[in-house]
Image (cartoon, rainbow, N blue to C red):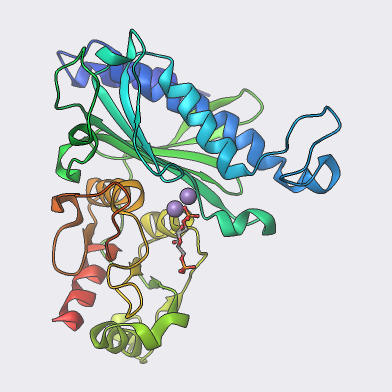
Length: 331
Ligand code: AHG
Ligand code: MN
Ligand code: MN
């Protein structure tokens, strides 16, 4: 049996970038390490009843932290030490984090993270995830990074990916040359290449949307939702509704099996709920790299110019023919 670990794969792929000095490789490796730590913490989350509730003090006298805080601290810790990163933005932090260390100031890269996606699912033992994206800084290395380095459109991405903590832990990422998926083998503590060159199906039968908010959806979306429930053999309708409430897990299923994920504008939240920088851009990058489509309904998500770190956008993403069908109804 031959296996390719994430570490080996990253090194092999460095040759795709002739002028690469290895910084991106080290950064991806550090993301792999942070993911393994979070995976370990996620797997024992159910033990809080035994080991101590979040917010309490455990028997060792340490504060028991919420998993999203652990995830955030782990990523910041793992990525701020290597000197590759000059700034970070996290869904858990109001403002961007500027790294002013001797090495970090020279870092070429900027990282955005959603350290714990699907946090409402933690306490009920349902899949959750982590999302990351990597940009090249635009300001001069050696100086303190600025908002300009962070607020970049998705079409400037260097790499992006996610980790899904599901029946197994998987890391899926792209550096703009296709999408590859790695499954964590806990017995050797390594992510192993399990899903090389992922291509998402052009069609599917699954639609993922929080239909409970239908009264607040635009008419076009509701018309589409009526259409998916009609019976028509030729178009495999009715479709199946699947909605976990963890974007990473919903997206991952649709990526592999085909499907469309929708978080539309609502009357209460005209820009939807999901964050452009932390959720929509990185997942859109993966969707497109796998042959899918991602749009806000009016624009390609990767072309939206961010103006604020915590900006929200509506999103329709997944199998190309399915996304186009939703767009037809939205016209
Ligand atoms: P987070 O846990 O990072 O705040 O993200 C939750 C997000 C996303 O994962 C999911 O798709 C969406 O919220 C679900 O929202 P609704 O409960 O409104 O459907
Ligand atoms: Mn999230
Ligand atoms: Mn989150």
